[in-house]
Length: 527
Image 1 (cartoon, rainbow, N blue to C red):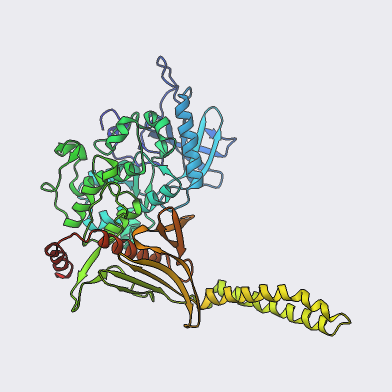
Image 2: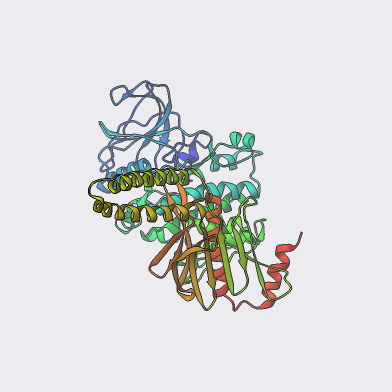
């Protein structure tokens, strides 16, 4: 990376905001209209002794300087200091970075600690363990397997998916800004929890992006990681997906994306890098020059990487986004869909043909919420019974009429409780017909919560709240229908969404010829 600290000191550890460790702090200086750099040395105190500087770490992509510091409690933190006399846009971005990091909570981001103003603006984060992907690739004898690369990408995608729910774009995804603790990952045989996304200096709200885009891309040494639209001061969530695609290509080839042949901004890599066909398909979708031609959401990419049999085409304006794979299984009568990746322990049942999908979610049972409702019902009805008896034996038995609304509320509450703990949820989608979401208790009590025409369905998605998948959502035009909120694990909810989107996509793309489907089937069941 020409002209960047990251190249001059390649062996130094990466810090959360981007950049790497150096050997000496910069000096305070003024060069014309350039900002004054904040200089701190070993032992300097910040915020009244709350933080003690231990060493200089490096530059921050034009927006500041980084230090390792220690708190009063002895914890290691990374401190980012904004240069004095910065542009107003830089101050906005710095404050935006602090606000976003304060609100973001997934384990894939170095934890926010503090933000304060003294001689300058300071942002404090926990110091992450590990090294950047860029460092590890340059390390002699070190390499990633394809499975490692996919697993690392999945961890980054979970962070990007969470950011999408906040309408936030990172803006600088690249190997230098992804920190991995390879030693811990090797010991635990998993990358989960050992991948951190740093470099939030360019973090933006999608709605603000057109206003601050120029500042966000300034000084960004891309080597092909920056999406084409960013050079035009436009940034969208798909820009991060493009950058992740470039990062994965770098890990697979040890070559910068800009080193590959490009035609009309399209990177051509298939004949130069060894990888699985499905992974090459995913990368091609991520590295499309136009954002509307890429896979649209981080969750879509997660689904494609988890279901590596078929990566579907992305069409501009398509009603259903391709969330998962549909593999045709060998069947006797008609075509039957075998929908992959069902959790082995799941009790959710699926019945799918080429024209109908039926999904049944079993009753929740007496889990914690159900037990609370049962206890509340018993107490409520007990109080009403006592009140009713007392009014009947009183001198004014007509006052018993006042208990009727209470009995009505009690019956409604009892029905709600029975529905929560005993109801079986059923989703049915008939191609070219209708869809419905209904519930039933042992075949004698039930109802329909949503219904409409299948052609109006846009797909399904998961609802994420504070980093957790809390329910499934069926999209019908501008309307949404929630289901699967209780009794299911997060993995099951993601799988159910994949199932629905796979079915809808297969229905809307029924023009695929039988020969192509036969090839998919053969590929799916080949050893």
